[in-house]
Image 1 (cartoon, rainbow, N blue to C red):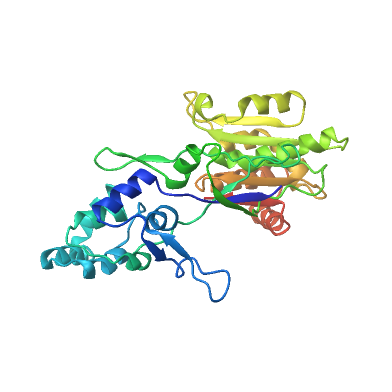
Image 2 (tube, rainbow, N blue to C red):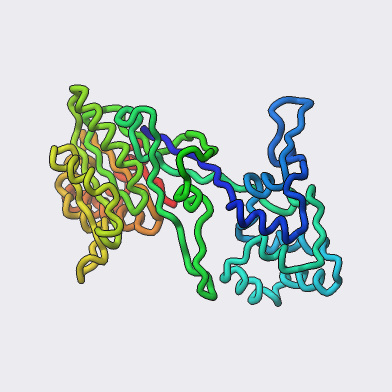
Length: 351
């Protein structure tokens, strides 16, 4: 346990071909990418086609910065267009630039907008950034699912100014990935490491897709239990807006809870008039948390994974528990939390 998967998405072929045709490029032309993909051996050169350059390497449909525009305007042959691009980098044009940002203008949009741009193929690697890896917590136990690596991915979407719905590159790529399709990825380290002590109590606060590592934790304990090991108690605090839409792996968790492997304390903030959040559910388990996390000699661990915003509320809830159940002063409670962090018993991964 404690692994994540770094995934390298690719741009949509149809959108790439549309761009290539608009720029009157040859998709089969061979180009060097050694500046962005260094060769593995001395004396060799990394080559690819124009089509693959824009599909696999360059973030053609990403969000540009003003620095990109500064690199772009020298390639405009029309003086008026050259000035128009350059002016967008000035403070007096910041409102127009921000409006374009709100409309989700991409690198491709800018390049296609200015018809006099003449960009040599070799220069695209200098003005466009590469597609960056996206890191996802692995949500399965390799012992429980031999030979498999499972991810919890929710397709990212947002409405740009003007009404168009935009989608995240990697989450869309994974959403439509089908058997037989190539996906470039590699395992990487995560701070979410299940305790070596199989009997240690574990408290897990998962927010949205932050549930992922904890499904792996629970599956690992399930595997260990089936192997005859004694496993410690697990408590899962899972937060979302609506149970019907966001209770991922519901059947699995209800089954694991029924056999006593985990206690599920779910907080659905919009399913009732009064908003209920993860920190409220944490407070309901105050006695258990103090006994297994705060009390001297306790061996428990607390993990938090998900969106950054609720982290401070979870932290405040634990401080309050240490004060009310443990009789600690506010200063002592903060020192206790600091000690738990340093010893790896309070671990957060927020984004």
